[in-house]
Length: 249
Image (cartoon, rainbow, N blue to C red):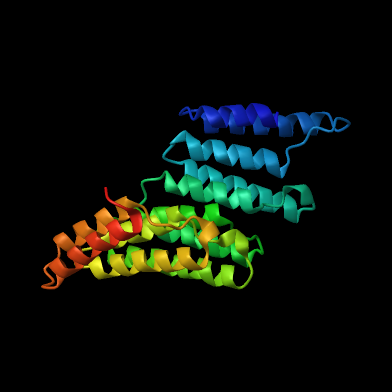
C-alpha cells in the first residue's frame, strides 16, 4: 500500500493527494474490520500521503497536510508510537508551503522549523533549504533577505557545534546572494555574501561552495543599478576577481 501511495505522489496529478488520502482511509477501515491482519498505516504511510498533497498543487494542500500531522500526533498520544511524526513528516509539510501562493509562506515555514526543534525533531538541510526558498520568493524585500542570511548563520552555528548534516551548500548560498541582489541598493550585502562564500569554500573545500560565474554576474548587475558613486570601482574589481578565480569567460 505504501508503494501504491508513493506511485500516486510521484504522479503529481491534481488529484494525487486526494487519492492517496483515500487509500490511507481505506487502510484504517481495513484495519478496523480485520484486526487479525497486520495491516495498519505507519508514519511512512502518512509521510507519503502528506508528500502527495504537497505535490498535488492543490490550493488547500497545506491544510490537508497539517490536518494529517495533527491526526498522527493524536494517535501517537493515544498510544500508537509507530505514528510519531518525524523529520520527513515536517519536511514534507514545508515542501507543501513552498508550492503554495501564500504571501507569508516564509514565516509559516520558519514556524514549522521552530516547532520541529521544540518537538526534538531535528531539521535537516532540506528543511532549512525549504524555509529559505519560501523567503527567497519575496523578491526585493530586505526583511526576507535578512531572514535568509540569519538562517544561513544559524546553519553554520549548528555545523560548528558538530551537526555536519546542516552544512550549507551552494544552493543555500545562491539564494542569499541573489536575494540581496534583488533588493534595491543592497549590492554591498550581495558582495559580502559572495565573499563569505569564498571564505567558507577555502575553509571547507569539500562542501562544494565554490561560487559560480552566474553569481558574479548577479552581483555586478546589482552594482550596475546602484546609485552609489563607488559602484563602478566595485564592478571593475569584481570582473577582475572573477577572471582571476574562475578564468576567462
